Length: 309
View 1 (tube, one colour):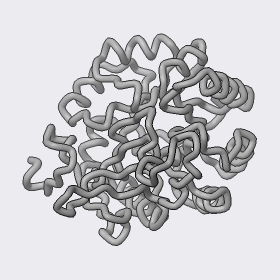
View 2 (cartoon, one colour):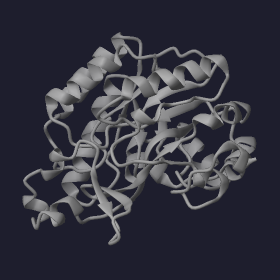
View 3 (cartoon, helix red, strand yellow):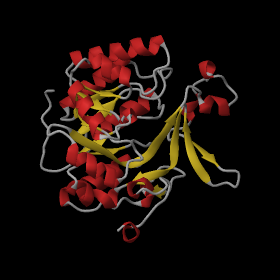
View 4 (cartoon, rainbow, N blue to C red):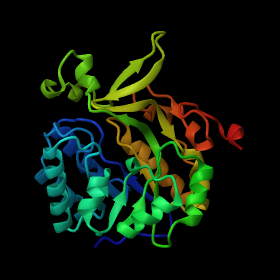
C-alpha cells in the first residue's frame, strides 16, 4: 500500500455508498469529498449487483482522482454473493483494484479467499466477535478490521487488548446501521415488482425508504436487499473514549444531504480530542439519534452521557 497516513490522531473515513444515486450525484458527492478533511474513502457497490450506473472503470478512475487529492482509497466488495456471475465480478474487481495498488475491503469470505494473503480490510459483515477470529484473519492478510455494529464498548475494549500490533481498528461512529441482507429486494417488493425486473426503484430513495410500524412510528429503513436502522448512530460523545481505546479510524456513513457538516464536526472534535457535537439538522431524513449498542442496550435507544456513565 503506497499511501502515507498520519498517526497522531484517529483518521476519518467515508464508508462505501450504500444507496443507489445517479452517476451525476455520485460523482458530485465524491468531487466534494476531495475537499473534505477525510483521510480514507471507500468506493464501490456493496449492496446489489444489479446497480450498474457506476461501472468498475468509473470507480477505479474516481479512486485515482481521490488518491491524487491525498486520500487513501479502498475498493469495497459486494456483501452478498448469490450467483456465479457475482463471484466472477467480485474476483475481477479485486484483481483490478490490486493491480492499481488500491486496498480492498472484504465484505464476504469469498473475497478474503480471492485476496490470497494480500493486505485487506476485514469489513463489518465478516462478524469478528473474538480474538481468535481476528488473529486468523490477520494471518490471512487483514491489516484493519471493523467490529460488528452491535458490538458494545466492553467487548471492543477486550478485542483491542488482544489484537496484533499491526492491526488497525475502524469503528462506525455516524450513520444508519446495516442490520441485515436478504436475497429478496424489499424495495421492489414494496412496489409489487420482482427483483430481476425492479425498474431500479431504489434510485428514488437517496437515503433509503422509511418503514413505519402500524401505529406510525419509524422503525427501519429499506435499501434494496439491505435492511437498515431508522435511527442514525451517533457516537460523537464517545470520541474521547474511542481515542483512549486506541481506535484508529472513525467511519462515517454517507448520506444525501449535510455530509460536509457531519465531516466537519467530527474533524473538529478529533483535532481537539473532544466530543463531536453534530447538529440535529444534519440527521438523515426520518432519523433520530441512537447509541444503544455501545452500552449493550437495544440499538435504537439514545442515551445521554449521564445515562451511560
